[in-house]
Length: 148
Image (cartoon, rainbow, N blue to C red; front, side, top):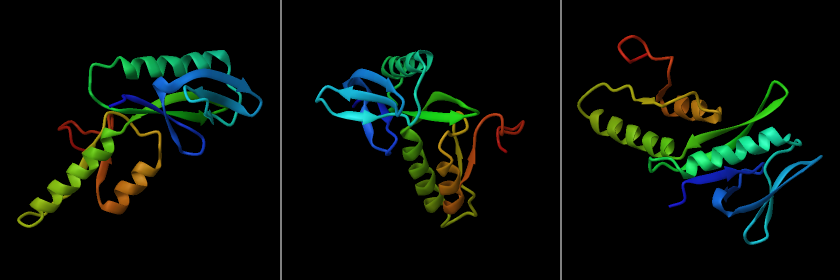
């Protein structure tokens, strides 16, 4: 399974190892893939430092020791652009938490908790967990006992 994907502005995903060319323009950063497909990665132009940061995110995701799949996302904030990655496995973890909560709820009162490594860059994770009744936590929101 491919370890790194890049989320485009239209929420499409492109395999990071399929990108052969990055092009920066006034409309944003685009990537050309091995098949000749051109996808838009950002809506704003990217300085070379941001492009290099994207390449570093791809390299670190591809060379990671773990077997997690990463989705690299452009995050705009305070007038600058940065790259972050989210673990696809968070979705799998959420499914496991819901399954275990369902099994245990037959015998116990249960409050499902999903603990992740850092605050998600995609705010919809919090809304999804709220809707499902799952407490979403990350460091440093953990208390002294490890639980919020």
